[in-house]
Length: 164
Length: 128
Image 1: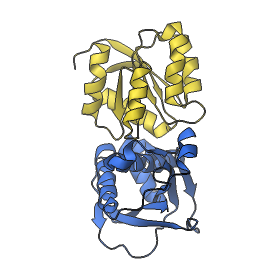
Image 2 (image 1 turned 120 degrees about the vertical axis):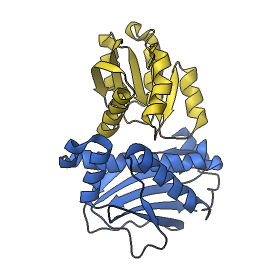
Image 3 (image 1 turned 45 degrees about the vertical axis):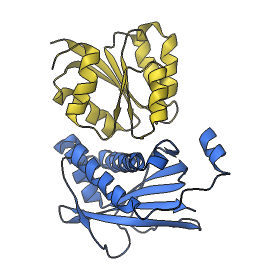
Image 4 (image 1 turned 90 degrees about the vertical axis):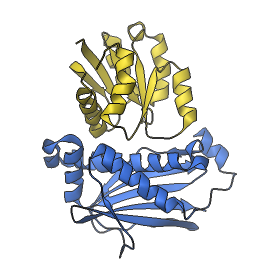
């Protein structure tokens, strides 16, 4: 809390286009290390992120915004089973917890790859939303980008939103 | 091999299971694995005694890992029990703070079973 208060009077770091490849790298590393699979990057994803499970991790400090992770319920169950074993596939709470933790690790791994953020940006604990008819809008001024990856023929979306 | 009783502290039940899985994959003989979802719950388990190791997340609701670590200083049953902090964040400052407060090591998420073995085995005096 103290860091957030002190940082409010400072300007936030602008979105750097180079961060997109770092976020992709962070996502692939997390999947390889925690789920034992390598998702494939989609160069130019079409449409908006969709899927019934979405995790959000807030970011505060030098970068103010959030990282989101969105996929289908089926993919969330698949990811839980990859991380914990087959028995987790039938547990909705494990699926929710898995996407929350993946989002948390992707945000943290991304942050550690940006030297100006590593010690100057804090992460919130993850929040997970379940549903299919909603979209996320950040209060302006904000900017961001979305990366999409395929795994087992399904798309997983990760978005970084920053306030400027 | 020495049989071990460990406490895993993380607000994510998935992560607690992943950590336990990684410890077993590393070759540790775990006889009992206690779980807590925040520092306050963990303190209750610590006070029961007879732990061989504590692995704790830093970023948790209710009582975070650093506050939990500092609270251990006043508990007799925690004396000599190595604590490994687990963090998602790449913040060296928080790692340094944890080590200064008495943590014996740290792991950064994501991690591999090999990384778990490298960090944990020396603290338990086991040869894996």
